[in-house]
Amino acid sequence: MTTRRRSYETGHKPKCLVIVDDTAEWDRAVYYASRWAIRVGGGVVMLRIIEIEDQNQQWLGVADIMRAEAHEDANAALDRAAGRANGIAAITPERVIREGDPTEQILDVIDQDVDIALLVLAANPGPEGPGPIIAMMANTVGSFPIPVTIISGDLSDEEIDALS
Image 1 (cartoon, rainbow, N blue to C red):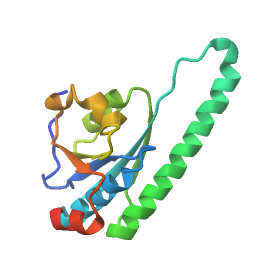
Image 2 (image 1 turned 180 degrees about the vertical axis):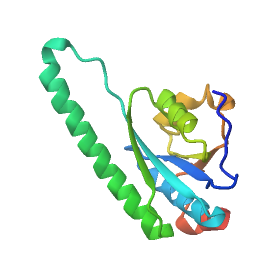
Image 3 (image 1 turned 60 degrees about the vertical axis):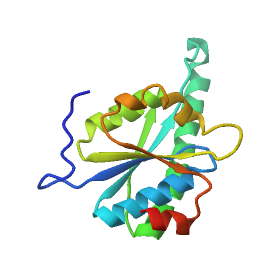
Image 4 (image 1 turned 90 degrees about the horizontal axis):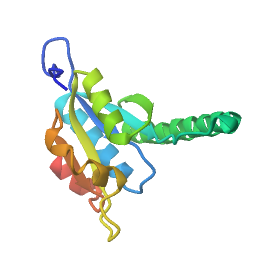
């Protein structure tokens, strides 16, 4: 990936990419990203990734129903997250739904939007580990084209306010 970032050039606005998933801590990432957007006068792009497994052709009808349900769930999750962002920062975030490998989809969204300047993820503070996306990205984060911020799922709104 060699797409040049243009976030702070004339005619552009920096954006923060935040992943909205099924973890309990997604709200911490949305909160931080929304506060960041206020601080820098930027925007927020919310990404929901649907992991579609290979479907057997004989079950194509079932696969289509499963895909439609997954998109419906994704839109509902993005509705909740967008409502939260709007309540925090009075912004309307961009919404993106992608299908496939999470790391590949995150990198592709970053590559296609030259205004994305930061990726925000939230980590599960519990003993089960930081979460599936952070665990998957651990090997590739060093080669990301933008900074990655990981927010602890234990931080309160007030603590995030102090950091952002």
